[in-house]
Length: 396
Image (tube, rainbow, N blue to C red; front, side):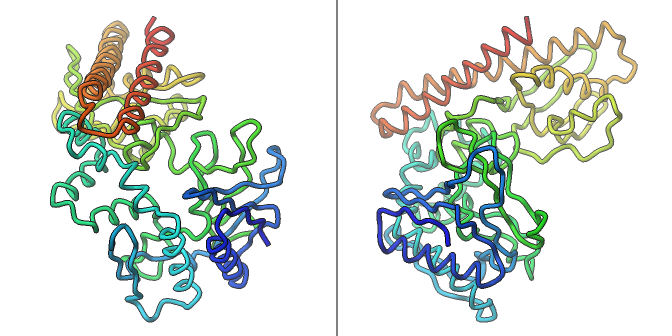
C-alpha cells in the first residue's frame, strides 16, 4: 500500500480506494510511493533514493478514464458528473467517480480559473492580443472563451490539461483519457515522460522514480518534450522556474533570407520530425520542425527552438537544413550568410515579442490580478535572459 500524507481525511479515503482498485485490477503501486496532498495540491513522492528509477505506479490501459463516457457539467466550479456509457467496466467507472470527487474536494476548477492566462487576462486586451496567437493550442482556448464565459468553457479548458491520448482505447471517441493517480505527478523538463508498456508492466501506463530537484523527495514526469516556459504557462497555468535546461520557442514570424526566400514560422508545439535523415543530421530529429514547401521560395515551418547548453548549435543546424531545401545549389558562403541572417531574425523577433509582452503587463495593473501579472513578468524575464545568453554564446 502506498504511503498517504494528506491534510484531508476525505481525500485520503478516496486515494486509498483508488489504489485498491488499481492493484485489484492487475496494476502496480509501490509500497514506497507517497501520495501527498497539501491544501489544493496533489503530488507524488517516494522514499527511494534518487539513483533508483524503480516503477512507482503502473495503471492498466483499460483503467484510463475516457472523458467521453461521462456527462460532465460545471456547476459553481464543481464538476457534476453522470455516467453516459453503461458498458464502461465498473472499475473504470468507479475510478472516474473518485477522480472527479478528488478534483472537487481540491477545488481544481477554481484553481484553473485563477491560474489560466485565458481567464486572468480576459479583460486585458493588450496582453490577450499578444497571447492569443502565441501558440496554436491557445487559439482554441481563446475561441472557447470568446464564445461566452459559460462555466463549461472552464471545464473544457481544465480537462484539456489533464488528459492523455489512450491509443489502446476500445473506441476512437474514448481516446482522450484521464489518468488515475498518475495524474498527480508534476511536470519537470529534466524528468522522463510517461512510460507505455515498460518491461514488467506491459499494457500499462507507468511512471518511475525520478527526482530532478536536489534535496526533494518529490517525483516528476515530463508532460511533453521540448516545452518552453510559455508552452507550460499557456497550457498548464504555471511558470516552470525549476529547470536548469531551458529552450525558448521562437515567436511566430516571417523570416526573409536574401537569395533563398522566406520561412513562415508558426510557433506550434509539433511532434518530432518524421522524415528520413542522413547520419550527419540524425541527432537533429528532436529539433527539426514540420515543414511544407508551398512555393519554390517559401516554406511553412511549424516552429523553431532556441536551445541551450551543449545543444546551442542546434538552431543554426536546423536553419541550414531548411535553407538547403529552398536552395540546393547554394554555395558555402551563401549558406553561411543566409544562416546568420535567419538566426539573427529569430532572436531579434522573439526578443521583441517578449519586450512587448512585458510592456503590456506593466501597463495592465488595473485589469488583472497582481499574481497573474507577476507570473507573466517572471516568464518574460526568464525568456529574455535566455535570449541574451544565446546571443552571447551562439551568435558571437
